[in-house]
Length: 286
Ligand SMILES: NC(=O)c1ccc[n+]([C@@H]2O[C@H](COP(=O)([O-])OP(=O)(O)OC[C@H]3O[C@@H](n4cnc5c(N)ncnc54)[C@H](OP(=O)(O)O)[C@@H]3O)[C@@H](O)[C@H]2O)c1
Figure 1 (cartoon, rainbow, N blue to C red):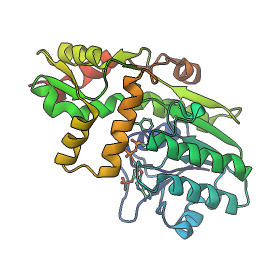
Figure 2: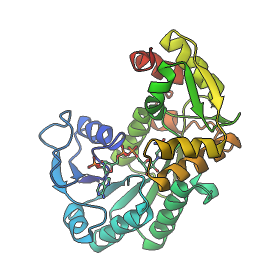
Figure 3: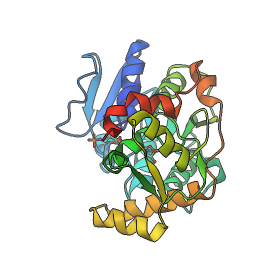
Figure 4: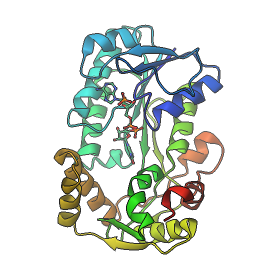
């Protein structure tokens, strides 16, 4: 039985659906009071648990053979990964852990707090003695849906400098995860999940403009201005500072490597950003 954590989120919800399509027995870890998305079939077992509550994790992982470990971006995210790993050890069944981390984890870029948390989680996983596989996706195309209000007004304003990023569609990340979870032979592998090309934010803006049918100009924000903007719209400071760190990595061109791992795992090329932008044109159109 495969336990999926982060199961109601962008990637996890699609992982649950993909595993059910492969006929796998799935238990979805949801938070108390959540029943999960309507797209899940009735055979998906739902169990209420919280990453901060080890006893609830013991219940959620009881009987697991494989665990998809995806935690949300949160100041305690490293602790949350440790809690799930420790609960997996306590099952006594040595379940295989598929850790959903972030691209570049193998280079240990601890200057970005989100990636640093996954580095800590992976170190704990390595020390646990459990069999593991790491998925390292780059930034998701879906993040640009959050910029839709300004894109509608003709502007993409992020602190991405001139660096290119091999963004990836979250649906391709989920498809790659399903393949790893449903098949054997991935122990010790670190898969880097990217789209088919690295795009500068100027190129991203041009593709959003083509899809939306109106001009979209890229403004490379200074990190301080970006931080002020996020704080001014009510972002949690820990998360806003982390986003500025991440864009610093992007601006330096350190997230531009293109990997073939999505195609190797799923058997088909990853979606292009242009496809994503066209599919979501209504969200970006003025
Ligand atoms: N976004 C990117 O571009 C990107 C790129 C690379 C890697 N990543 C990594 O991807 C992960 C985020 O994936 P995502 O975007 O699919 O996540 P997401 O959509 O934010 O969903 C987070 C999931 O975690 C659950 N959750 C949150 N707090 C919880 C808690 N205390 N106990 C139990 N469950 C909890 C949420 O449940 P509720 O529905 O109840 O809130 C939800 O199912 C992060 O680890 C991030 O570092 C993201």
